[in-house]
Image (cartoon, rainbow, N blue to C red; front, side, top):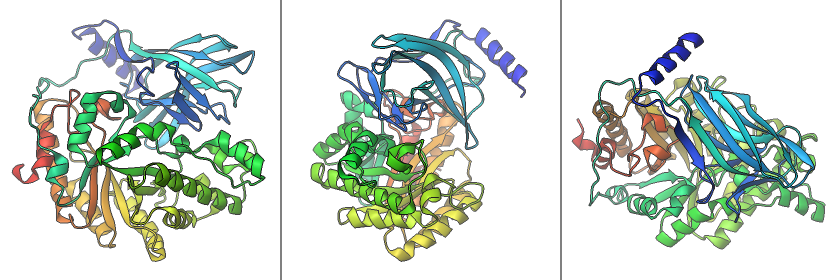
Length: 514
């Protein structure tokens, strides 16, 4: 569909909707935490004044960012208040990073100049393009190292949102008083768990749902490198010691999850130590300055080792036994070449950086910690070939325990046979298996779609049950549909109210679904 026709269709849908009034898509004053926001190449955290502060910036794009589900060709209004106290004035922008077929591109949406110590509003509009992912963020235009705060971020659809094009009404999901527990159902085979946003830890209802249903949890963003690596403290430590390999870490963003797990006897799967994305650019450069050249291979190996040592030491001292496994390396295989991405890790260290990552993880992880390589599109033949090639370079070292399948699927795509082939292939390598990120999208929230979704979930669980002695855990990626990064595809086991969908019952008893 060309751009003009697409815009016209959106306008027609809006015009025929039940209501054309302005819709508030998102609003947050940060009174209940970071609300899904994370530091992009920097550190972002909620302050005591209910603002989101970003520090340790090295580039203008280093920023607080958040994933949003937007509707292509529809108009949105954006606003945020910003404040800085480090310059007489500074230029700010609201921007969007959008991704299509793995390629990321950018647009600047709103502009403003903030005087020192004064809250300044940025406002703008955006007609969403057709992309797979949208990240809205607040950056500076210049002032690459300036600390700043934001508050009151809002996103509205001034002309309303189009209604679903389905003629079948949404399925009504009923609450259940005595819901069976997935962690208890699968206790004799493997852990059943979820990735959870930090926002659940301020809500007793969501904490109870997580506690009742799951035996293992994963942080969505709060244990990724850009949340854990403390660049500012690393710079201070480097200056104090004269050691370019000095690394400082903190787990401020993940403390709510770690405390909850510790208090409730729930395991945590660490995600992720090494990744080409959401890792501060400064980590790879001399003096932790992204404007300077890359460090040498030897320095980078030293930083790798000290980073892993710092992570494992902190967790063992403060939350002993809570983190039982790690995604040591994430998404290292390129979709096009079916071999290593040309990431900063590869550029600075070379093709053996995966081996070194697992070597250091094994050296410092507490005894019994399981170490995984994690990737997506495993069911695609070309990608599977590259993944197997990488695993075969890691297995002889004796440091890798297993493989994590990211199963972000849609009903029928990939096919169940493709999924079965990929599981069979990885299992034949003798590794432990885990489904680290599971969700299954559908186009509508009606009864037909939810029944098809339930059948697909049931078929997946039947495949995994074949290998139950090898499977360590199965984890859905999110708690409820409304908390999912794919929320417009209704991909999870619970609806926005926490009620069990047909998919939940299919996972609870796959053999009952025909």
